[in-house]
Amino acid sequence: MDLLQKIYEAGVVGAGGAGFPTHIKLNCQVEYFIINAAECEPLLNTDKYLMATKSEEMIKAIEEVSKHIGAKHLIIAIKKKYNKEIGILKDAIERLNSKVQLFYLDNYYPAGDEQMMVYEVTGRSIPEAGIPLDVGAVVSNVGTLVNIHDAMKDKPVTEKYITVVGEVKNPIMIKVPVGISIKECIEAAGGSTIKDYAIIIGGPMMGTIIDDDESDENYIKKTDGSLIVLPKDHYIVERKRKPLKTIINETRSACIQCRYCTDLCHRYLIGHKLRPHKIMRNIGMSEHDAEIMKEALICCECGICELYSCPMGLSPRLVNTYIKGELRKGGIRPEKGSKDIESREMIEYRKIPTTRLMARLDILKYYDQKLDDVKELLPKKVSIPLSQHIGKPAKAIVSVGDNVAKDQLIGQIERNDMGANIHATIDGKVIEVSDKIVILKEDNGVIS
Image (tube, rainbow, N blue to C red; front, side, top):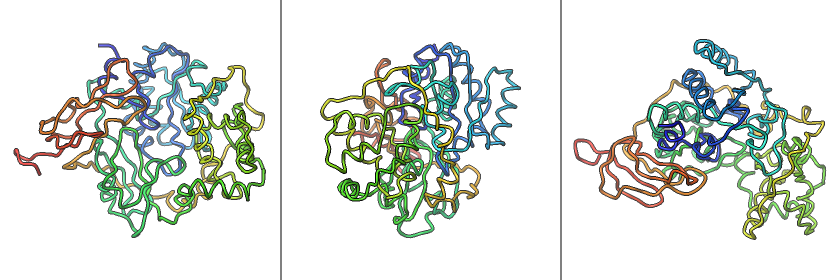
């Protein structure tokens, strides 16, 4: 069986982003195979843990993938401050006599952005609305490589390592089945230290926010890697939850056209025609320059403009998100730009230091939290979404009342479709099939 077939059958998707199906992504021939080991969002530790504990698995998977895609350059792009992980990876590379190389990144945000990383490693700017393949590269992250190694041994994606930090009693790294509730993950960290809190699923810059009372109805997916507990009145929470109408009104009254949102935008800096300050001017002055508005389509929503750049506390990110939605409703999609683009001369001087970003976000107090040793959680119930990835949801192939075993295929996608297979993450009985499959563990034939 070939590698892509194994990856397809295992349901591997991008483990740290939007969940692009890996069997589709790796169906290519490229010059560069780049592993994103930056883990650039503040407070995240999952990839560093995987590099420290599964370095050989990573290197073996990189070598195997590179044979399939014909890559000449096998690069792990890692922050040079990760001394421990760098040492472990170097040892693994030497033991395996691998041709994998390390590329060292500075400690800035967003070093882990796919397009920024490709620029750093290759010196090539990806065209507007383009992908790394346009410049001869493909990028996967650390968790994805570990899952590819498992797929090589016919093991599907059923588990995740999750960092739980912030306002919790015992910050911890946990190993959990996909589909476990967020509430159980927080409880594994001893619960929250405060009464009213919100939870960021993902990183503080690009993660999604839920309230504490929603944690029992939200579940870990293949793409999740961290949970951050913060007070409900925290700066990040309040900024991300500000209503669009309020932001538009504030834009009209408070935008000073300082250009910081544009000058610090990394997509602008790598050469893209994305100028958030002009979009904000369009909104603030009720102008209707269609070409300016279309620039919002190439915004990656990294959050720099919203949470760092703007001295007036406005949100170009949310404005761009709204405009993108409206344009897509009208059938307008971003047009791929020319490959003949160059980065702007100030790119090296406008990278945002991660520690400075954390200070601005008011999360420095959580930076030095020591994580307890990894704890494995074995829940009695999981709720596994049929859509945990870009593309079509998987089609359920089990029914209510069926007994299933861990690793059993329960949701399927056709081989050439954009999507990913879904597998049972615990033994048990299927008690619900909807947009998710709910499995309840049985003890000696009795549902527990």
